[in-house]
Length: 140
Image 1: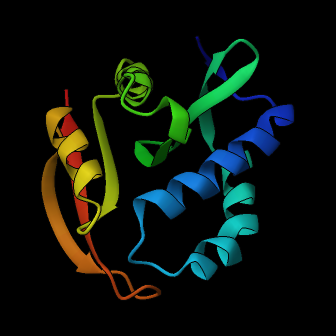
Image 2: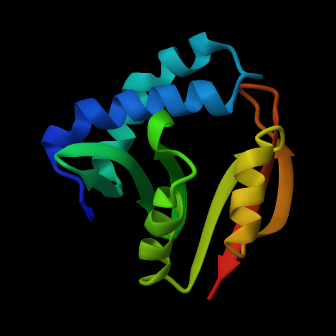
């Protein structure tokens, strides 16, 4: 079931955030994610966040800042079960356009977003990691 995030969800959300980033970005040092975990948590608390909950356990979440998707994160054991797609479909209902950034080397995420109708709009090198990023856009 999809619902709005509650403050008490933060522990599970941050666990999913860290493990999903480590799994999806083996080309970025683990220390980068650990160093940015607190800042990410602060951003999540300020964002519009929807979670996927099953039997009182969070299995994924999506975070938005207006029309920008800050990320979709799914627990390792629950991936490839449609949770990310359903979370994305939920936010598409209330937006005419959505944007996001994805690392060029994160091919699984690129394929996911392309299947969901996102198209590349720009590319740039992220300063902090030195990795190439794509800006993707979806329009209703």
